[in-house]
Length: 217
Image 1 (cartoon, rainbow, N blue to C red):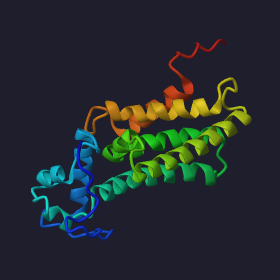
Image 2: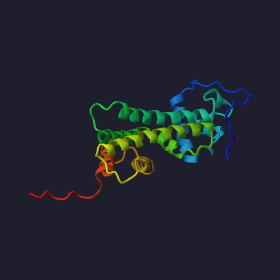
Image 3: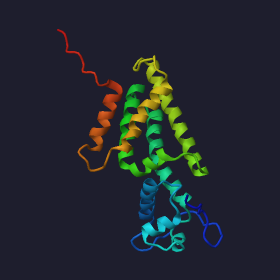
Image 4: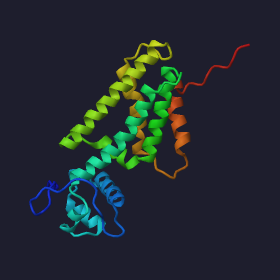
């Protein structure tokens, strides 16, 4: 198991906040490479030494570029959660005359687009297990989003747009379980682009697979 490395080797706590990387390795590059490594090896199994080798730094030099492994994890999880929170916030607070069902459909579509645009960060978010304060905080934020989405499902049920014989909490988990499953197989640059994919997920989720009966005159 990788050693916990949250402090500078001198024993002094590292200062939080952005740091300047060496040429060719700005902060964004360091974060992207770290997230990819966490997803490949697992966060707990990845040490700062592993990340240093990935970036071509010495183990001691990497602390001049990033304060800690936990800082990188927090940055990645916030990236995913901030985007998803913005989607839910838009659906809940900016109705603009739309029905609850329309807002729920829009949320599903936008969630797919967020996953596609931020797939490595969302993948990492879905894999955290609450083994640190950073992970526990991310899980709390996810639960808050789940609760708000379940409320939107309840509103759609109450207006008569959705069936009322399935628990709204279950509906919410199933809907966004479908969205989250995309991290396991979707690959950017493939034959299906984000817009087509988001429409497909929303159509299957809300309209099902059964072919509509032909119209009887």
